[in-house]
Amino acid sequence: MFVKRTRLLIYTLCLLWGIYGLCSTSEVFSAGKGKTVAFIPVEHEVERGLEAFLERNIEKAEEDGTDHVVLEIYTPGGRVDAALHIAKIMRETEIPITAYVVKNAFSAGAYIALNADQIVMKPSTTIGSAAVIDNQGNTAGQKAESAWKAEMLAAAELNERDPLYAEAMVDPDVEIPELGLEKGELLTLTASEAIKVGYAEKIAEDRQELLAHLNLDDAKIVESEPTLADKIARFVTNPVVVPILLSLGSLGLVLELYTPGFGIAGSIGALSLLLFFYGHMIAGLAGWEAILLFGTGLVLIILELFLPGGIIGILGVVAMLTGLILAGGSLSGILIAIAIAIVVTVIGSYFFLRSFGYNGPLKRLVLFDSTSSEKGYLSHQERTDLTGRVGIAATPLRPSGSVKLDDEYLDVVTEGTYIEKGKTVKIIKVSGGRVVVRSVEKTEENID
Image 1 (spheres, rainbow, N blue to C red):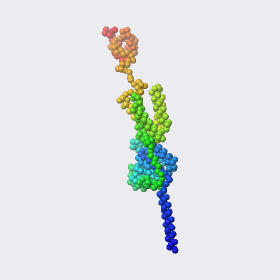
Image 2 (image 1 turned 60 degrees about the vertical axis):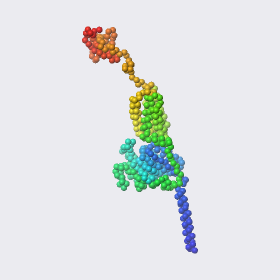
Image 3 (image 1 turned 90 degrees about the horizontal axis):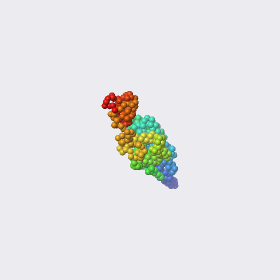
Image 4 (image 1 turned 30 degrees about the horizontal axis):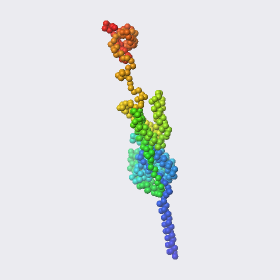
């Protein structure tokens, strides 16, 4: 009887254990069910267009009640100001964010990853190398480097990561022997090294493995792909493209003044400026006030061609520059772009006018031709026949005065000497209305 009861107890415990196991397995397989994960790409260069794209999609995720956001990072870096704004957006949202490094996260990309709640990396990916450099590839200066280092350290400490490694990503003077990092090099961590030093929580081969790590296996996936407008905005707001667009815009409009009709130059100029403002509006950097200011300035400059004074033209230039600055986002960046555009326009216009001359509407408003005797323009009768003639000083010549030549009186000047009245003089040169005389001795040959 005791044995039977023991067996019954064992069977009952096994049955209960099996039921518990089934329930646990069901919970595992249903992890994340009913939840939503938004995957947002962070690709190519980090710039203001990417900032606007991420801000819009994170706001949409908040409105839709998304449970988790995954930033799939593959970027060589980019603008510091854009990265700082992106970090601010990430810190302000209440949605958990995971940075999933799918290729490389360098410079600004590494900074964005450090601001996420956790970092997951694919095998054979890297993160780091975050020095600040300018557009020419040189270091940005001690002040900028110090500020960027502080931001990197703060981002590392945000999620309790050792700031030493963030510092080594920025400062080539930091040495980390255990990672083989020597002085003069910037730290770049592989996926396994990032796990080792606590700069990544997981190495995941694909999204499925990533979601399993997040306990969101059965969650609904929402893809956030950039639209055509987003792609245009990202292209147009690129710091390399901005000066090109402004140069084409200003040069095209200026050359249109010297070519008949509205042709290729004007079309290229107008299209370039439209792209500039359209891209910056999509990126959230420019408002209608910038476009209205620029347009008003352009109208004022056109009016200046017909109205005298110069004040209207100056106001037009100021309005156009103000519109460009308001649309540019970064003051230093847009000022550099404007300076480049001015230089390109001046040089381009010079060579164009030397080659093709003035043939546009400006020719009807500005007098470009000069008058000369060679072209048949005479402001007076030129008496070249007087050269060599002899006359009498009708007045003292000090050095100008009057000379009697036959029955005609002429206004003359001497070579700088004083000649008394009544002296005999000879006309030695006639230049326009200027008759130059010289005193000569009175002889039979020269007495009239």
